[in-house]
Amino acid sequence: MISLYDTAGTCLIKREGDTTAGPNTIWIDLLNPTEEEEAEVEKALNLEVPTRAEMREIEVSNRFYSENGAHFLTAFVIHSSEKETVTTSNITFILAGNRLITVRYGEPKAFALFADRVCRNAEGCMTGSQVLVGLLEMIIQRMADLIERLQDEVERLAPQIFGQRSAQQAQGRRLEVMLRTVGKQGDIISRSLEAATSLHRTLVFLADAARERNEDAKLMARIDSADRDINSLSEQLRFVAARTSFLLEATLGMISTEQNQIIKLFSVMAVMMMPPTLVASVYGMNFKYMPELDFPFGYPMALALMFLSGLLPYLYFRRKGWL
Image 1 (cartoon, rainbow, N blue to C red):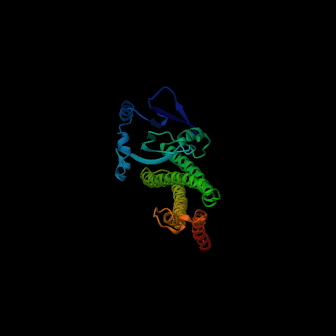
Image 2 (spheres, rainbow, N blue to C red):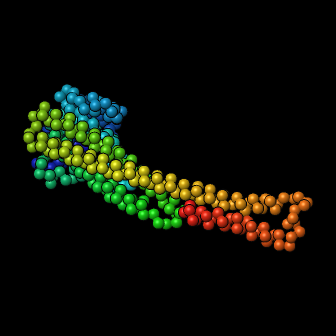
């Protein structure tokens, strides 16, 4: 789908029903484009739009390059942060003259929010470079919201992990749930850190491209400010990642300790049952001449011996603190 945005003062107006770029069109947004739509844009702007496979390339030369006077920037973006699970996608930004072309196969909410709020933005949207910087600022803002939510979730998990006071079986199930939750948060944090690194590389390349395009000092200042913000978020993500790793290791340690306790309990019970088993084995033999066979109190005596032989190890283990 092709969406065209024309500039009108300090606002962007989305054109409906027409995919032909006009003189006031400064942003062309390609969402899940077909081959025909890519060919149409390539013919109109005389540039080659990268395919989805090319956007997934990890080499720097395939993500950030200049061609025929246009600058291509591909960023790894994390989105859908309000949902229980987040998604990621690669987005290519193309600065061609005074226009911005975006190619994406995901729907980050930052795009819709930017288009909705751009009229209230004092920075303006008169050029493709301004639109690109505004989009990156909105993506960074959304990422900051995600990091705050992740940090709150990690802080909520800590007392739940270390404050286990329930029965042993229920505690085991709870720890398993905590393990899955912490692991899930760790995966989101690692992908967020990857996205932050990608955005930093994008801003560095954009700063070089802006200097080459002789952009005004105000736009350069916004790029530098966005780069400082993403670096700050990266540091915060590393802190949250370290805390999540600590919680993950603590949860695994508690599960291991619980399993050791269970194994120790069964081992002690097995040792406790050995003397009674020995007594029962002795009096279970079928020899003809056994002194206690005709003893009137032989059966109660055998039961008493089995009970005492099991009780004494139990009392000994309790005294040693093994139970």
